[in-house]
Image 1 (cartoon, rainbow over the protein chains, first blue to last red):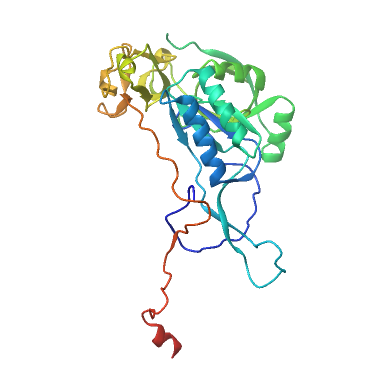
Image 2 (image 1 turned 120 degrees about the vertical axis):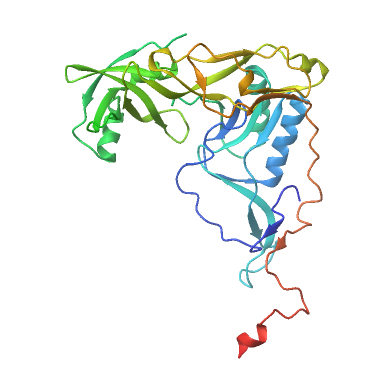
Length: 140
Length: 217
């Protein structure tokens, strides 16, 4: 599997709610530019990996990529043509839960047009509407 | 460049509470608060367009016209919405113009490091600098030329040339920027769905949990 935790306390988790907005992880913290989600969603490990590959192919060691999300949540599913009941399905994939405002990817060491092009490619791999953001300098 | 005082007209905010503040924001104002110098805390209302314009220009010091008198205040905190677009609230601290204050200013690195020609990438670790200076002499930013930075070399806080009267508050040995070669990240291993993480506390088949017998009794 692409990315998943090394150790977990429970194999399966409940679906949970994605209420509200991101109150943490919603600023560009490590790089100079970032990709911010505008909606709440699950981002699967495969999608995160696809974004990483798209960005690193484009950057070709010119800049640095930061991935700010990690798939902590196991998503289970029942096999096809199985009747309801008989317990919860087996874990199918791992996902990161993102809420509006979460900065998912960041880049540094590149200029603004390159960062925009790079993160646009990453945005195409994401299942959510995204927005390009720049780092805001602290005032106080 | 030294600080220029931004002029702004503020009104004392009589109505408090999140619902009233929301109505204020909808009407094109921003709620704020003034405190400090052991005087009363004063909730205020500020015009959004002018305030945001000043904040975008990096203004720190404001001269607020409040109830017919001028008050010099320093921006202490700015709250933004979850997307970082809208200003929600501003904190101001009363300040004397002869006072030394602690503020955060942007650190801008200029030039192409010579290490980039050798395959390195400039990585700026510290983007904001914490400084202490006279309130009237807050620089808008600190610029540093990194064109002499070679591959695997680092720039420390102590290497920065700060304007006169400005003192850095962070550790002098703190690394500000490096030029490093970026190693190619290894792709994720394995096939989807094949591996599973280790479950903490899971008992392997055939192994009896410690104290299991005792629990049954």
